[in-house]
Length: 220
Image 1 (cartoon, rainbow, N blue to C red):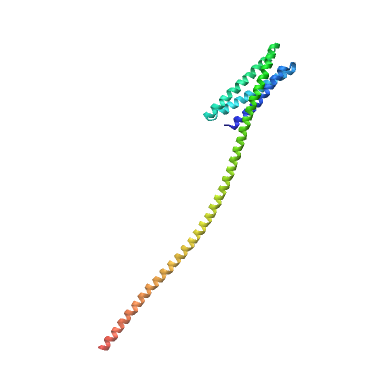
Image 2 (cartoon, rainbow, N blue to C red):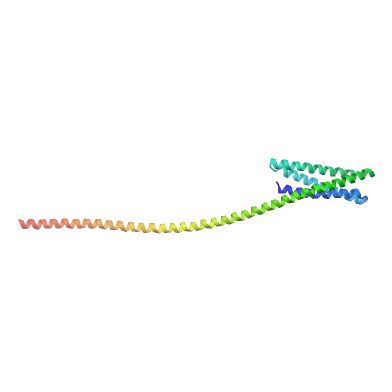
């Protein structure tokens, strides 16, 4: 769905499991140890709130079908976090009697076990999604490398074809030059032939006139 959301979700599940364990430890302890645990839990709750807000922002930026699924999951996380906050408030009130303390301890342990199981499942799901994302990235990278190799091969083929075309162009250019030279030679020869024809015609005409004159004077 979203690698960013999955990363926040994994951090939240780990933090939530840790807070549940600390709640159970605070219920069994007393004095300064209890105060220290409650202080740690409150700091952890702030971090959990921050992660919830980040997940909410990320979920709302996604497509509607993905967004609906992630927001439903967020509602469960917010409910779990509110339950933890309620327990911390009850622990910090300082007015718990023995029965309430035992009841809260039992509830805290039960919630911790349930939360741990749920969070383990969520962590496994998140890890699986990350692995799948990693596989997809590897596949995409492999495809990209194959595409790059294909592109290089195509470019090499195009370069070779360009060289062949340039060679053919140069050859044709040489042939054109030769044809032009041949055409000029043939034109010159044609002009000479025409000139020679006129000269021969003129000579024949002169000879005919001379022969005619000779015959005229002889017969006269």
